Image (tube, rainbow, N blue to C red; front, side, top):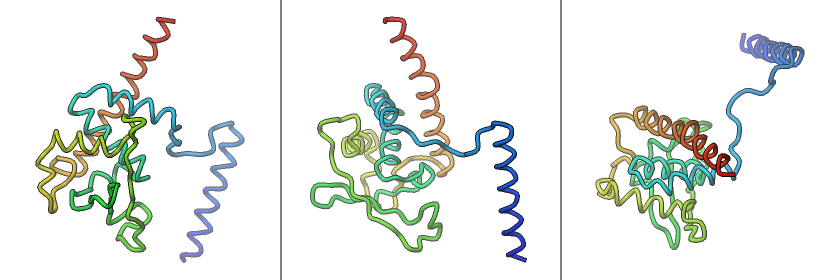
Length: 180
């Protein structure tokens, strides 16, 4: 039965790919990677803003990038998952997309300061976020990101991130072209 399903799904995938190719449609699906230039542009915009929601958004954005984690995992982070070790921050996560139950746990993840580019510095972002949210520094099982559920934290982050990318940066780039 399992073997039959595997063959069926492989056939569906092959047929779909061939149909897309025949119609000239995009064959690959899903999210595309973000270039480093785009990452830096977004981080710089959030850094220059200084608004409290942008401090949180930048911290989560830099966590995703530096730890190679999805926002869905980052929203579950607790202050107890973070520690100083020598000259860097060390993050530990219980699960990831490929290890839902925490089996074969990979990590910890080490992050170091980036004094040459403060807008990309996760250590600085964490410090700024900590000053704006001192309650997280109490320790224990306190969540890094405040919200009633992880879903609400993720929704708040994605709403702000999408607004920055789809509206504010587009508006800035149009204004720059008008100057030229």
